[in-house]
Length: 492
Image (cartoon, rainbow, N blue to C red; front, side, top):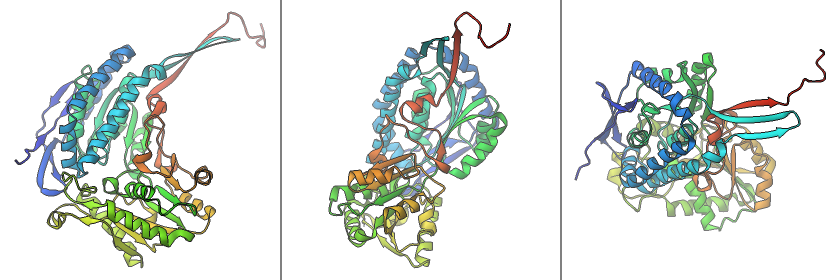
């Protein structure tokens, strides 16, 4: 049975909005198949969505926290019931294997539940009585939040914003990526239905819509996940009205393999391979460059290739034997290939990894066979740029100081990992410039929604997940109630 194309709509003030213009989303496994259609909204519709959110804000911000939580919990229950359909749709439109799509939805629900379970405590007033009287520290909703989300993890990178923003009493307008718009639109539609009209709005569209969402004076906060270049444009657009921002941006996340790492530890090596090639390498926090102590370099490469060949099976995302699907879009395929070709032209060795289960399908879709790059220079593009695809360079280092210097010599600082004896690894980890450093694991395998996540340097501003991820959607409001009397140093 052939899957019928899915149509999704904008949601403004609780209503689906029909548009004359649409865009299509193809299946990366078979680009001739259209998975669905999304609307191309206008600048005027973006303004209407913002105005709707602004009109809903006064009442919603005064709604008791218990009701906000109850509404979010009802949305979570609906998403759980619909999880098989959501996961399948995400897999078809994105290209990630079904197990990966199911995992993304599971992380999304885990975070939403955590936010519901902790919001009341995190957002409650802090009251301090002291020698000067009493001080109340209140967490006030900010206002209208504009959220712009990417294609690589569309469900989790949308719900990471929706849950804390709405629980804190804000209203929102969200714009999904046109490269994976369908499943996330269905998720947002289900969530929005549990909230009053105007609390959660969604628009699709082109650059004029994005500009409106980042510059409109009634938008108080921007929550963006995506590339550093786009973030710079957003910051400029928001400058005139000094908007609050949470930006989770690019990364060139490094893994350091210390001299005391056990190269014969098959489970650790498998974790490392997964941290490079899960979601075909299209994760902001995936390990994108590996530095290995020279004393174990040759043996590490041998064991790494062995582990990669065992785990990597490329093919149809709905084949349960497949671990790596196609790249999401043709543009990303071209970019990753250009980095690999450049590395080869500079004299590096490129080794193909894993098995292609269906060669005919492989040639038809946006597939790239995972590769490891050996012999690249420390400052070659394959090393210093974020590949965002299924390729990884492995480079030697001579001592810890050199490894740390190479890792920190980057405009990015999102995540990192150190592999080896725990105390040794911890000493190295403390010297790395990153928002998160994991020891003997990496990427989503070490992610915990209870703790803050975000980057340093040009990898972002602010934190998501954990209590900090909820507090990033409030303003701190200090109310001082002094004791009756006058300060002794003020003259009469």
